Amino acid sequence: MATILVVDNREINRKLLMTLLDYAGYAALEAADAGQALEAVRAAQPDLVIVDVLLPSIDGFELVHQLRSEPEIAQTRVMFYTASYLEAEVRALAESCGVRHVLAKPNEPQIILNTVQRALSEPVAIHSTLPEAEFAQEHERLLIKKLAQIVDELETLKAKLEQRVHDRTAELDIANAHLIELNALKDDFLLITSHDLRSPLGAIQNIAELLLEDTGLSDTARRRLIKNIQELAHRLTELVSRMLDLARLEAGKIELEVIDLRVSDVVRQALDVLRFSASAKNITTRLVVEPGEQLLQADWMKLSQILNNLLTNAIKFTHTGGQVIVTVGPASGGMCVSVADSGLGIPKDQLPYLFEKFRQVHRQGTANERGSGLGLAIVRQLVELHGGSIAVTSELRHGSTFTFHLPANELASSVSA
Image 1 (cartoon, one colour):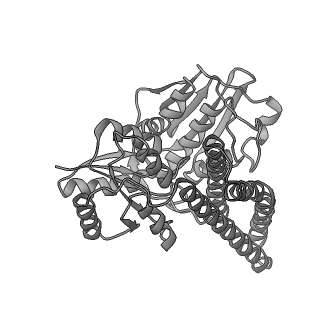
Image 2 (tube, one colour):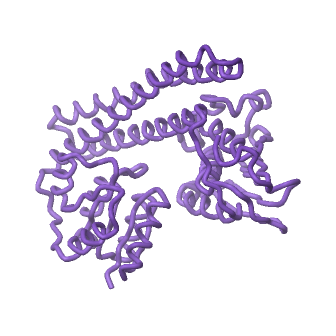
Image 3 (spheres, rainbow, N blue to C red):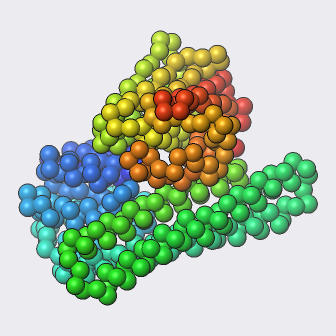
């Protein structure tokens, strides 16, 4: 029985592939990012790794590059399964590092299984057909192209928002008020586009030009510049993703897919996803489930997003050796969830504005982590979309506690915003 590792940052994508592979008789493993994937490959020595190219922090190409650099696992077979990287140059770059199969996502189950079978039956080509420097240049050029596409998509979104503002100015008072909010969001997007997006993109272009033109750079200097590009690209990708999420929420385009669930199960999954971030700072995380937990009607993915944002912030603004405690328990008419940390805390005069868009009390985390200023605005919107409410208490230098309440009764807004 062949062992196959599925690497994708979206759980639903991993579960779909793992279910299909399990049905076909394969032993399936999973990883949410490149770091988890490398650990899994070293430990389990899988026969094949199926990788989404668009991963957080380190993309699929860099994952393969790192994998090939370790003799013990260099001969591991890899195939890409992606919805974003399908151009001819992507396939050529993949082929150059021994990845012969780039499959479009989503795809028919039988096509996936046929491709897996072919990949397993083929010998491994571990030596790149491109010199190291040329491969790095092509990889950088591909990243810049993708970032430019993201900026274009954001400009298109801005234009659509402007048109929507223009088209709806003659509607009723309630619609006019909503248009004012959309117009303000458009202005925020324009500001971020001109600075927080274009500035890092310009830096990436400058670094790429230096790498292309200066052939005298040492390997150490070259890798440092490439790492800078990766970090900038990750910041841009996260910012654009959050801006698009907020735009859809503000425009009322987000729909809830409600199921019966236990909030504690969602919390456990969120803590598991972030365990590496917490352990990197030696932060203790703990879940406390009080007696009497009941089933709720909620959207699992949106609730995961709420918890991920709150937990990410808690870890980001907590010093090394601190703690983050999540408490789940029954409350009047539903369930209450609190995320408490021992971190930096928030000044009292900033608490009333904390859930506003682009509001950042601390520009950097305790380990110099950066944020977009959109996470808590998205959290509030998603909590309210579920018919709930959120509040925060904090003491400067002693930590913060974010508490949200979700009703147990049927959602007042049905299943859509």
